[in-house]
Amino acid sequence: MALQNIPEFIFNHWFLFLVLVATLALLTHNLIQGNKGTVDPLGATDLMNRRDAVVIDVRPLADFAQGHILNAINLPMNGFKNQIASLHKHKGKPIIVNCRSGSQSAMACNLLRKEGFEEVFNLRGGILAWQSANLPITRKRR
Image (cartoon, rainbow, N blue to C red; front, side):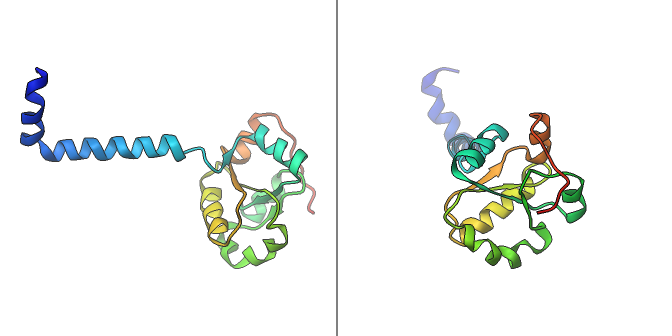
């Protein structure tokens, strides 16, 4: 197809062209915004060590008890929204939220941002990524 036929193609297949434009826009948005507000396990340890970041684990208590990041606070996702007030004392610190794989904690991060928490990071890959990086976990409760 020659370049002069492109306008005719767009006119004849306008719906497909709109889908293509929308898809490209969403992909571009994800590339630009996708990693904003996330941190990998090594970045999380850096935030914990250098900036005294607070770790919030949103997994159920049974999963938390099987092993969690040292000094993590367990606020299970099923009651998370009602427990956000207990975190206001940490509002000035970076907050790292984790779950099993990173999807539940992403929702918790959004809730925290809506409540005015500015430095909120989702642990990319969750506790599974933390363990894959051979970082320590504990069974001791705070």
